Length: 78
Image (cartoon, rainbow, N blue to C red; front, side):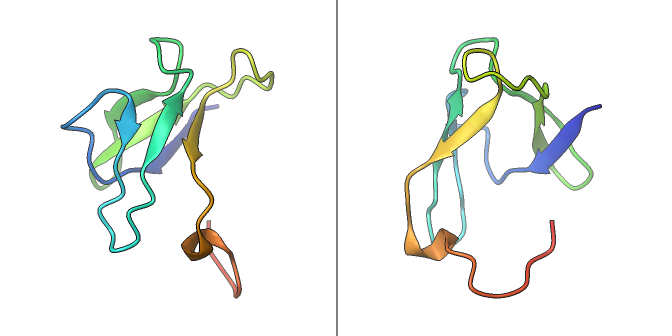
């Protein structure tokens, strides 16, 4: 079961995931080595492929610093 999530820009770094919106909620791939989420072609542009592992030591993630723009205050669609 692969999950693909759209991302804005992967051309500048293999470790940083850039958010090109006005909010600039950039994140970091975790883990940052080749065991982290991998870049793939998504439905509309580049995407990250998360492996679905559930433990903190081998699970894929993108870590984003806390920001008011990430607080959900209404309905959303995932």
